[in-house]
Length: 113
Image (tube, rainbow, N blue to C red; front, top):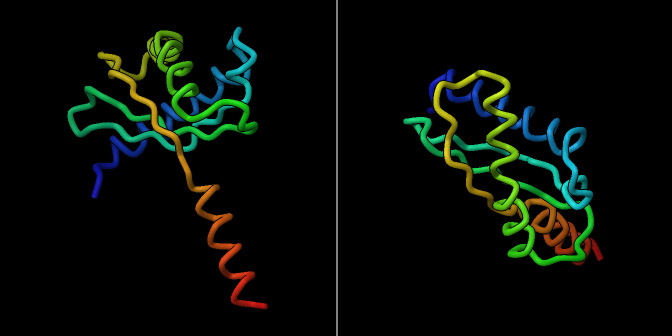
C-alpha cells in the first residue's frame, strides 16, 4: 500500500499535467493527449505518466517521443506549482485500458449472440 503522501502527490501531478496539456501547451498535438495515471517512485525521484490519445493518427512510439520531448515543459509546470523540492524524472507509457475494454466488450457481445 502506498503512503498517503505519494497518493496525493500522484493526483496533484496528474492535475498539473492535464491542466498544462489543455491550457498552456503551444503544440496542438498535445491537446489530443490525456494523462490517465501517474505513478511516483517511493523515493520521489522518478514518475511514470500514463497517457491516452483521442485520435490514433500516430503510433504509440511516436507519441512517446513527442511527450518525451515535452518533458521539460511538464517539469517547468511542476516546478512552478512548488509542490516538490526536486522535480522527478518523467517517463511516459501508453495506457491501453480503452483498447482492452473494447476487446472484452467484443468477446462479451460474441458470447451474448
